[in-house]
Image 1 (cartoon, rainbow, N blue to C red):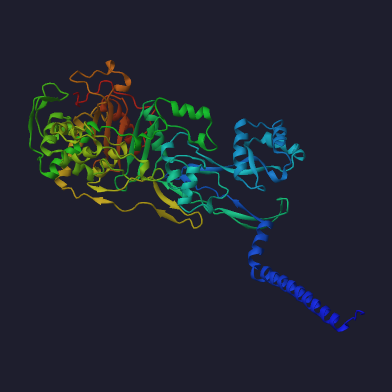
Image 2 (cartoon, one colour):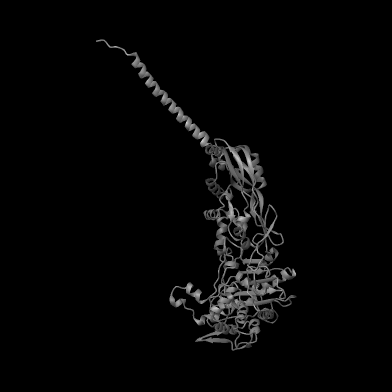
Length: 636
């Protein structure tokens, strides 16, 4: 049989196949259109932003750091412009070869290369990175003449921090340094990451650290169009930075400078406070250091010298050094006795030159004693026996409660460092303190005999010069207490508005006026007829004061002779004072480490400081020691 061809069947099969092909084509076009719609309409904003990010770069513009001045407007920390040599990596073919060639005409040290490599890891390809800072005019001219050889390298002007007074007030001002991982964590905790884009430096200590977010300012930005190779093509938009706020301090820098000179090469600290406001007039820790060394990264040699120095210049003794207050504690003990009713001003004891408790004898410095001693005489002539007896009668917890309300054994809240932990707490001994301090039960018990030496500022007593000055200022201000502070105003650089930092007292202790009169009269007596007489001979103003000598180690009954004791084991010399006594405008505490008697080393420094502040008298040099000064202080 022959094969018959069915044309109609062929047509149907063709149409079926064609329909499938058309459907597939339409489906493909439908999917393509849907994808186009998704990308071009629904996801338009997303991809437009990504495209802009690839085309536009935001380059941060670091703000000018705020200026710090003293109370009279003298500049203590500011910025200056200097030329830097900067490399833009995206415009440089071979960085290592380029830097080697550059080093042939401009000095580039190994530390410069290390810093450049570190910054290179953190920077974007189109940002310029400094390879050399603080170029001289000659170096700028040399590079300009050969600029054609170095594409991608430019000379730019940058701002650098400077402390024009050098070492003066360095422990108060602090310093800035390069941002570390620890600093980044602090910035993140403060939610300031965006504001520190492009910033290399941050406050490390002192006021520079405490007021970092005031001083830093607001970072600006420049929108730059870049090509596919990451090269900047043109600037599209610029948002200028806002300079940091300025700080005006309570510090009198001339007084500060004179005070530091008064110490000479002696170790120690001095804090002077305005009793009526809590403003710190001078804050000295000697020896000191130059904060300019840290601005662009301290060299290993300088750091080793500072860190290994036996006198530890980096320690702020004014707020971190804790010392027994010695006999400067006695006026506060006397006031505590009056306020708690443990003594009257007229009540007297017979002083044989010692006080016996159990089988232990606590000796007075004056052999044979002072005879009959009332409260006035106990302060003026620094009678230990009076305060041995008083401490025994009062008990440790009564002493601790009264001294605690004056700020002893507590951080004062001075505005230095990142937070209050930058300041030492000191030790105000009490039964509770001892339980927390020691682990073994037999060590935790407070023994009554331990209270005796507390009365003369020895034993477990340990306070910072700041705490001692704070208490003295509160006494001078008749119990009205202000928080010590260094910043007087924060000045807004945009509006010039001055924001006061402190204005109200934090506490009024409400001491009885008659009790205050007793203490003030006795402290005036110290200057006129007591242990401070020699240092203040001829002073045309009236002051209240108290000498003190704090033991570094126990003599165990032997007589104290300066010449026979090693320097580092000699007593610390202390002095507290306020003046003029009618209405004090300055209160201070002086500590001279291993300075011997308070009248010998500390009181002459206090006299020099008060003479300048009250009279404008300029000293010729360091305060001389009074080798003939006597002190009726403990030698146990």
